[in-house]
Amino acid sequence: MKEVVYFFDKLEDKTRIALSHQPIIYALVGGIGIVLFWKGVWETAALFPLLNDVGSIVLGLFILLMSGLLVSFFIGDEIILSGVNREKKLAEKTEMEVRAEEHIDRRILERLDKIEKELELQEKI
Image 1 (cartoon, rainbow, N blue to C red):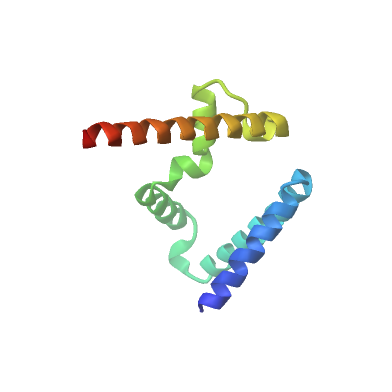
Image 2 (cartoon, one colour):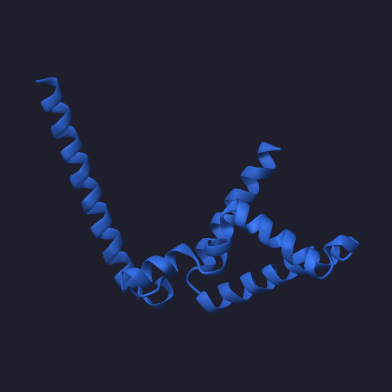
């Protein structure tokens, strides 16, 4: 089982890296996958009479609310945070802007590591 999980994990990494350079094709592949997945869920749910009409809405809302996915799925954390911070969405940023942010993040982490080491030294004294 571990080999199967490892294989698909590596396959997913390679596919994501390859598709990330072609966002329109990535969106199409992802859209098709999502539609086919939900088509299967829809057709499976149709086999259960309780899941018709209002029953499916009530059960779906209950599951989404209990799992905390209602807001994050329909709106998304990044969209909420980018709106609060008045930032561009990731899809609107250029590759250069993303790389600049990564560089800033790395510098911040380096500074935090340095501060942490200094605090450890002070604690020993």
